[in-house]
Amino acid sequence: MHVNHSHDSGAAGAPASGSSRLLPLVIALFFAWGFCTVLVDVLIPKLKATFSLNYTEAMLTQFCFFLAYFVVSIPAGLLVSRIGYLRGIVIGLVIMASGCLLFAPAASMGWYPGFLAALFVLAGGITLVQVAANPLAAGLGDPARAHSRLTLAQAFNSFGTMIGPLFGSAMILAAGVSEPAAGLSGPALEAFRVEQASHVRVPYMIIAAVLAGLAALCWWLRRSPVPAVRPVGSSDYLRLLGIPRVSLGALSIFLYVGAEVAIGSALVNYLIMVGATNSEHAAGNLIAVYWGLAMVGRFIGAWVLRFVSPGLVLAACAIGAGLLALLAATMLEGTAAAVAILSIGLFNSVMFPTIFTLSIDGLGEDTPGASGILCLAIVGGAVIPLLTGVVADRIGLALALLVPMVCYGWIACYGLLVKSGLLGRHAPAAVAAPAVAPEA
Image (cartoon, rainbow, N blue to C red; front, side, top):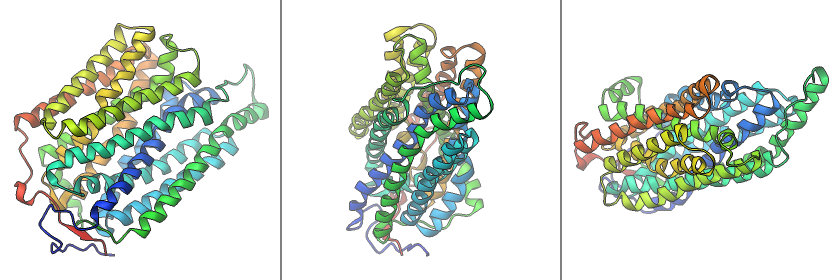
């Protein structure tokens, strides 16, 4: 039950024998939660039509999904600090699979709140997996290459977000997106919604089975050597929030995830609106380009970050994303608008892993606590898309892209603050890395 805090396995920062074999498994986890998260982008146009929702109501899918990060992250950090990374991941995967299974009754009832509840449970499991897997990926190897290693793992997360829309588009959108006929009500309306919602059931059952298999594999490997952790208390969170790199990093995560999700959620409707395509199925496939560019950028970034200051790379990418959002919002139409908004994915690529590793740099055994705070900040994926939906209902979907543009402005500032040295380091480099020990 308790985590082994022994430092006898070697010098701090040196990976214990066998710990590196966990990195492919951790990368598979990044792929899995990216795949599950991006499917919400495909669900939005389907549910929006099936239940006759406006933009604000449709964005409740993202609100409920990312609200789980706010509710679950701190308890997840407490749990992981007590039972260890791998056991925490196993519990998270089981919760994820349970959330996927809840899509079956929601579809059978044709009930929108049922889908929102299923998304919340699924995201709660993802939150627990992220709280454990992000610092685990950063800690499995040379501390000097933590930025590069987490960016590489995030590249496979982007591979999942690229494949996910293709899977979702084929399984959910290929049958078409239909709104109920005018005047349809009562049992006829309920039957229509059940029939349309049924397209969502099978893909999530498939995902549940895969997640159960991953949970079994993680349980089998639960005694592998991993970075040591210590129990985290509520006072630790307050202390960690007093560290500027952590608190401002959490704000940056909040705004980044919010901007990324808001753009991904708006893509299908935006691409149709600007005339880039006239089919929801085709637009759904184009979401894969957005996330595919993020994947390419992360593979490139994993190499670049070995040689260039992470703060500088972060600022440059945020400025590029902000300018593209401005162009897509105010100046472009047709293919040019599509290229601009999809290209934001390339600049998004390194932001999350770079912000994350900059924020936990030097925390050692405090890393799980900081990871809980940073994952809590992912609730930005609930707030910013909902705000974007409200703005879209009032002044139009294109101009609503100015909301994520402002978010990228702050992220650029955070990168420059770190680059300038104004935020300092948490601890001397000699104690920055957690030791590696087997989980008991």
